[in-house]
Image (cartoon, rainbow, N blue to C red; front, side):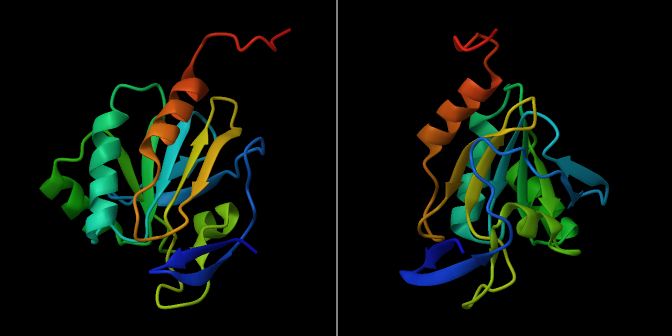
Length: 174
């Protein structure tokens, strides 16, 4: 079982263990307009946060809104926030370069990707994590943040994004 920390205290994560090289699970989350957003079927940056209503999650979402703009990958921020709250956040913060998706209905995404906090004060919401999926639906980058209250490694994630969306041959092509 995977773990992370909340203010230094160990918390367990529930769900599948998805790793780099695995085929990304295909699941739906609910967008701010209540339409479904499919995750796992194309080049995507999936940014998972506990709630957009916290300073760290808000800062992370703003950073990906700026940094991932213009990339070939779709950027989706996933949390358990209600779609209406996500919409208000995006309007207030000027978020226009990414999508927000809620896993509030049945936690399919959180369980499929192994990011559901199963104990402690935040049990039932998602941890802080990033998955990058290439155009073939394969996970090329995974970061489960060691401490939920801290921001992810932006440089590593953005570098992995660039590599995942590069059209240059890596030398292993046939």
